[in-house]
Image (tube, rainbow, N blue to C red; front, side, top):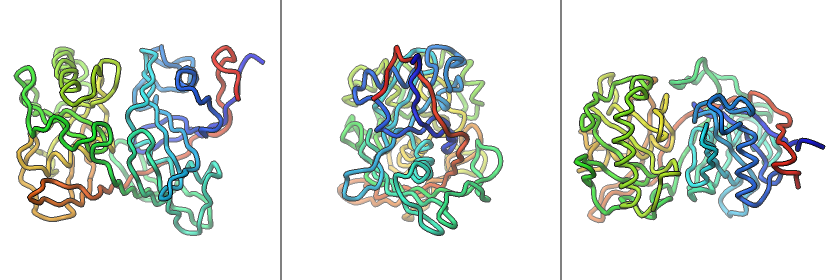
Length: 361
């Protein structure tokens, strides 16, 4: 035997794509697991030519699922971000777009039975500890991917997957504001460091000489910006208690600007070494929370209501985040954040890795 077969589903989740695997079919050791995932994706080549990745960070993501022992959750969702070229695997973050496919994939894998009509799936995001309630469309007791829901960044329409995120504050750093400040100044740039669903460093686009309305391609060509942004990100990571983040995709970076297309605020999100073509679900929650928190770099006039609908303009359109929150004398408290995404099964079968990488369980 020269290769090891691993059962998989290949799915689009939100505006990301990748293999969904059963954790029981994979090595327990994280170093070995990392090698297996890099072989699956084809990490180490700009086109991922020797794997099923797509040459972009939104197409080199992996979901690993298992039945949960948590009293609340049905499914444990373990996420990995595999780098395109650097042969790195980051197990620290989670991904809300890929999470959009977790409910459908868990049903397809037989990890949870489907109900007739809709099937609720309670998901424990292992990487961050977040709890997410998903609602999957299952008419006749089978997952359907056909529907009328459209999300910017994905062509066509599909069945909705409703997501309600809970317990997302401080998942990576233990604090809503990891530095203890609403605004920090790093290299002459004012930033807000926040940890809601995803630890982020957020700045005003104008601080970098940008409008905040540039296309993803235009920003990616601006290597001077990325050099300045990365220097700020590395120093912010230390201030946030995350240590040396030079080889980690977290904290992520975000830019904000006044809205121009009817949204609440204009945003650009970074993965972090390239511009996200749309918006991460986790990043959207952090940016929306930043918008709602008085005194941050994203402090704009918003309706005084809860839950509040925050519309983020991004490089491919818009995304709505419904945030249930409270502002009291004790500070800003987030109860939950809701979004609607879509997912689609693209392929199913076995993916193969060289036996020299792993011979299997």
